[in-house]
Amino acid sequence: MNAELKTQTLPMKTAAAEKKIHKDYFHAAVSVDCVIFGYEDRKLKVLVMPSDLEEFKNLFSLLGDLVGPHEDLQSASQRILKERTGLDGVYMEQVQAFGDTDRHPSGRVFTVAYYSLLNIKHDGLQLSNPLLKWMPVYEIKQLAFDHKLILDTSLAKLRHMSMETPVLFHLLPEKFSLRELQELYEAIQGQELDRRNFRKKISNKGWLVDLKEMEKDVSHRPGKLYRLQFAETFPQKH
Amino acid sequence: MNAELKTQTLPMKTAAAEKKIHKDYFHAAVSVDCVIFGYEDRKLKVLVMPSDLEEFKNLFSLLGDLVGPHEDLQSASQRILKERTGLDGVYMEQVQAFGDTDRHPSGRVFTVAYYSLLNIKHDGLQLSNPLLKWMPVYEIKQLAFDHKLILDTSLAKLRHMSMETPVLFHLLPEKFSLRELQELYEAIQGQELDRRNFRKKISNKGWLVDLKEMEKDVSHRPGKLYRLQFAETFPQKH
DNA sequence: GCAAAAGTGTTCTACATACACCCATGA
DNA sequence: TCATGGGTGTATGTAGAACACTTTTGC
Image (cartoon, rainbow over the protein chains, first blue to last red):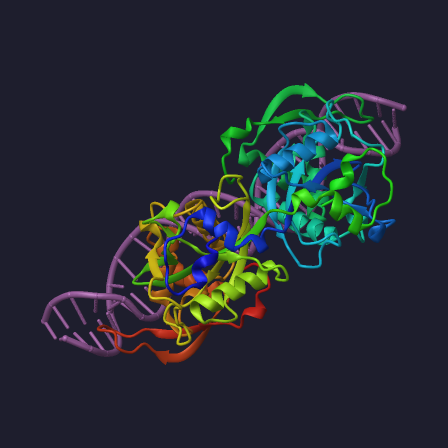
């Protein structure tokens, strides 16, 4: 930013002097809201909790917190995730910033949304509070604040990414069958996929490693298990 | 956001009470930085100005400003664009937020980047200050603050979008020839394209309207002129 | 033996790519 | 007449879409 651009003449200033001039502007808060996606029972879910603000009584909200004075955005997002789920190193991506003037009843609070993808069945997953709830995304009609907008925006981004890049794997256990993977894609895209074409496409991508293991505990012919090829191999697309 | 999530018990609070509790957090500023792209002489350019901060003497910076207490992010971005270029209704898209703790010497300043695309030859374009400069993007090695990172991130997003959606047209005059359009795509993608294939692809998209006019003032056989099919026809892709 | 899902191949179509010649204009 | 770019079509390879039958396992 460069607020002093408004002046037509451009005398040199120090940053310290500039801060004084603009001290009236230093009265906003910035939060991070985490859109934590999980996948269970063939449904995409998001982690929410009841809002404890009187204004949003009976509504759920995303998990967020203010960004500390000496904390980066990404660090804040990782901290929230760790505090709420006990998990580190979860896949996470910034969605965008939301800053409508009336979005928060407490004052001027900008927020930056991050979505994360995690495996609900992960051993280390330990929700911090019994009120936290995995809610099926497609059953959510309303949320506190502008969180429904944030959710919808995140979901659109996730959908888009899932077509270009191997991100959805983060929602599955380490070992999974092609059927599970296909069901996941179907849940995200909202349409059924042809099994033969799906398998062909996935195997062309070269994303998977055949674990030479079979599914267990299924009441039908067991399928092969795979895991994702090490993520570093795919810096960007395809 | 929902900062009170930290409490394990969840007594109901009002937003006003919450603001007091968190007043220590309301000391950040939020700015918008505009990455204003233009296209001229077969080069993608970005509008910059000399930084007037002592800390960044001799460096250029993007055009930004603090977001006013009663101003939305998008409004701030439009205001900056209007103030700097005199233009309204310019195509614009949020890139993302940047919030590293040390990104600004004046204090904790978060910024939200927007990129805009405009036609440098637009009649209404009137730069507010003679120090503003259209700088070729690929010649920029360094900028003030974290603006080089912001520029690179915006450029990556622009490149990505340009492959999926008709956005680059905003960089051209209303009437343009297929050669001009192809040169623009080549400039953005950084590679030469086959003329026949390019024309086939573009005409398959159905984006263009044949104006039944010809180029003038070219020292060779003039080409047909086109304009973009009305933008509302293409809400998203293809 | 029945139910449920695994596993597999061919055809058709659409799109990307590679590639070369004649035409219209201005200088 | 020359230089410059305008304008066009064909052949090939690749990827996505449609589509059905046999196999394996649990019950």
